[in-house]
Image 1 (cartoon, one colour):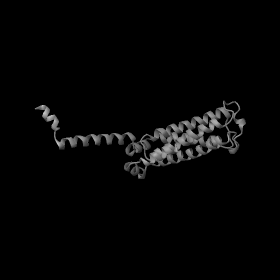
Image 2 (cartoon, helix red, strand yellow; image 1 turned 30 degrees about the vertical axis):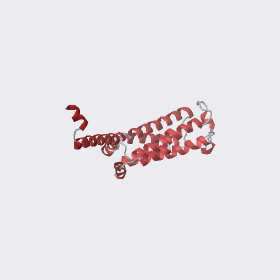
Image 3 (cartoon, one colour; image 1 turned 90 degrees about the vertical axis):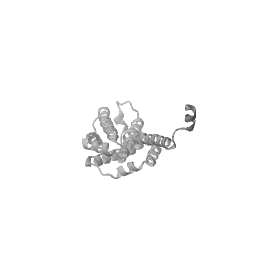
Image 4 (cartoon, helix red, strand yellow; image 1 turned 135 degrees about the vertical axis):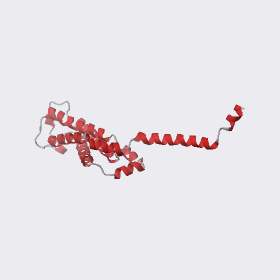
Amino acid sequence: MIILFVKTVKKLNAKQMKNIKQSGPFTFYLLSAALLFQGLSGAAGGLLLIIDPTGNLINMPLQWLSGSPFANYLIPGLFLFSMLGLFPLIVFFGLLIRHKHSWLAALFTGGTLTLWILIEIIIIGFQIQPPLQIIYGSLGILIIALSLRPSLRAFLNRIGTNPDQGRNARSLIHRSRAITVQAEEGPDPDARSQDQ
């Protein structure tokens, strides 16, 4: 994931770098901050659960998992690390470069987070202390609401980048240059001799 992130940063073109500098609506910055917070906290929490599947590092007792399909926190930690940690960071980067479809990935992140909290409440019950279910459930709903804001989508569609646009434009430029060169050189001499 980190290698993919570094390769993507190296491929940024001038338009994408200019887009990063353009300011957006307040919802854009609020959504970016929410995704960054979710990504960092999800990656950290997931990593701690992967390192210690008993949950002792973050004070999560194993008895919370009674009645669940999990014997320990390893699989929930892997999901938390990847889907609610690394993925929101990738979505944050997509917003940073103003990718026009990043709002859709943010919507998926918010839905995944909200569903995660609902399933957690069903499996282990509602936990008042620590109030993480309330905090992250609210964060998921906030990410969904911000992702659906028309002002955000309009902003990203107006200046957003689409990776296919660059490839298509380069292909079109290459073909038009070939046609121009052919027109300047005139017809192929071998083709003229065959006509005569």
